[in-house]
Amino acid sequence: MPLIETRDLWQRWDGEDILKNINLRVERGEIFALIGPTGAGKTTLLRLIDMLDTPAAGKVFFDGADVNASEKIRLEMRRRISFVLQKPVVFNTSVYDNVACGLRWRGMSSRRVREKVDDILETVGLTGYKNRNARTLSGGEVQRVAVARAIAVQPEVLLLDEPTANLDPVSASKIEELIADVIKRGTITVIMATHDMSQGQRLADRIGVLVNGEMVQSGDPREIFASPGNRQVAEFVGMENIIDGVVTSNEGEMAAIDINGRIIEAVTEYDVGEEVSVCMRPEDVTVALAKLSSSARNCLAGNITWTVSAGPLCRVEIDCGFPMVALVTIRSAGEMGLKKGTQVYATFKAVSIHVIRRH
Amino acid sequence: MTEIWHGLVKAVELIISFDPEVMQIAGRSLMIAVSSAVIGSVICIPIASFIHFNRFRGKRFLVSLIQTFYSVPTVAVGLFVFVFISSAGPLGGLGIVFTPPAIVVGQVILITPILLGLTISALSGVDRAILDTARSLGAGGRQMAVLVVKEARFAVVAAVIMGFGRAISELGISLMVGGNIRGFTRVITTAISLETSKGDIELAMALGIILIFIALVVNILMNRIQQR
Image 1: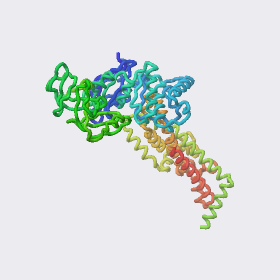
Image 2: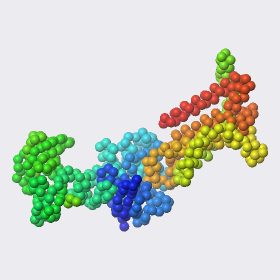
Image 3: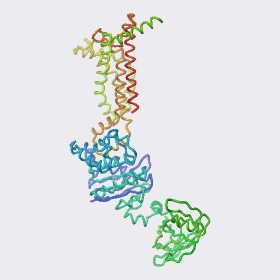
Image 4: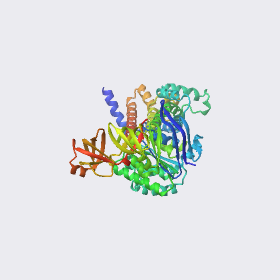
């Protein structure tokens, strides 16, 4: 029996469908990441799971029980779940009282509250801030208070809504470490919404991709990353090259695909005549000045139309009859003297191409 | 003009010499108005929370009705209380007419709309995210109400101070149900009114200055609180 299950769940606001027919099952102990662009409905789904809102249609089950029950029963259920909101707010009181409130509301004795809160504050590294008014904290510290407050009550389910959005990189990685610690330590079930694909990959056992209110794909992070089900998911997981073409031949799953008159080879099951999109990660494309003799089946000549540096890498846009993006290290870009107009060869393997059908 | 100046000098003398009558009247005024504000708050804050946290038909209408009574005339309240507590009235048996408790009853009625209305708007000022956070952390109905009142505490205190200000500065109720009895129910406003009509400008002015001073202190307190 899944710990959390949604059946044909819909949410509607102002006549607009925010969530469409969501069927989600999260098992006890599972770490599930909801990924998707901003406005996809991730927050709406988490709010329904935490019983903060009522769905327009469909049901939510918690531990096998329908959450559409009396407020008393819902409160009992909600007390087994903690939710860290996207823009966390702290109560206008001390850090200590903020972390203690959930425990006090559950009727814990003040001595045990004290032990527990001291312990948690140490875990999140806020011991020195115990008596500070929480409103005076920085964004990253507020987020830590919010996480501390949520885990203090030892929930069975932890809901996290974009836990590291709006934080500087250092605070973000601290929060992520903290979440990873919580996950490692216990048998907690986590559902986290994030628009950061790689965060989902790092933390989750399973990922669901939410786009425009629909759960378009869910599965193993590696599977989602390598074989996105449609164009939207492909874009979201960083397949920057998505090029439309038509299958012209297919022998034993080694297909030739015509893209604007250029033929590339890819491994796919789609038959001749099928309209497809070819997806490729920029990091899978090798750029060279001369034709490489390698096992890679595809090697296209083209001219560089644009280069731009991004950290240790250089993003190179090439026109090979169709636009393509490649990533090379800054160092090799310098050695090859890559710049606008340089003629290069873009090489990539047939297996590094993911082919999806166009609708 | 010299008369005003003379009166002002005498008034200041009365204040700095802690004139027993002036101090007694001022003390009584404070005592009565503070009692009214405290009793009013004890009654109104829970009722305001109840109105704020519950959905019911006619809630909007009720809130606008409450706001309409912010400026209820003091003499209207005085008259209303008087007909109830005068010896011929339905509550005449209590025998509180022309006593300080009668003034307190009247003032509580007078400031109830302000306390209710301003407390309701103070509570509505609490961020929705605070409510969601509290619910998600497992707060029950009453725990939630207590938390929200705590979150809105500065705005709620401001409402109480407003109520106090209205109570200490009113004249109609004190005069009509208190009776302005010297040494018993005479308060600043009734004394000013009487002394002025008697021609004793100095005493009236001294009390006026004290009243303005109290208003000033209240205002400073309000500003302090609202800046937090």
